[in-house]
Image (cartoon, rainbow, N blue to C red):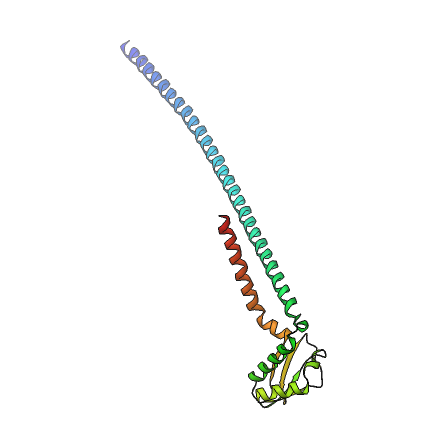
Amino acid sequence: MLSNNGEILARVIMGDAFQEAEAILEKAEKEAVSIRQESVRMQAEMRRQAESDQNQLDIFLAKAKMISQAELQARMELIDQKEEILQGVLDTLRKEFFSLPGHPDYPSILMRLTLQGLAWLEGDDFICQVNSRDRVWFTAPVLESMSAESRKKLSLDEQVIDIEGGVVIVRRDGRLLYDNSLGAIFQRKEEAMRSAAARQFFRDEESGMKSQG
């Protein structure tokens, strides 16, 4: 009888232990499921946040790129406008420069250009080349006067050349030449005139900005 009661008691105790163990396991499984679900939720939230951050970064970079492109375009347009103004100044200077043949002092300018060419060249015998319109200024007395002043023999070429004005000095043997035509002079001076006009333009622009400030 006692033995049977002991066995029954042992079964009850073991049964309670199994039930308790099963309850613990069931609770643990539920908690594990909950933990897994929370982990999945947190991972999804982290992915959404990362995607959101990436989207924000992409938007920021796109805006920065647009602003940079707009600023570059504005600077390019400003440079183009300034270049257009400078080119207009040069065009005005060119027009005035090539109008020299109509100036009352043009004959004396021609003589100075001729003497300048003679001074630059080595030799004793030279010819001067001019266009058909300017031949009238190189009379025999004028040629003799310039020859005496330069101490070099100077004569007028029989052939006319196609230049806007000015003179080309050539040594008689053709080995040396000094181009003092209006076109050559302007070309030699153009870069210096552009730089001078640009300095004046930017100085006036800066002065205007300071006065507005």
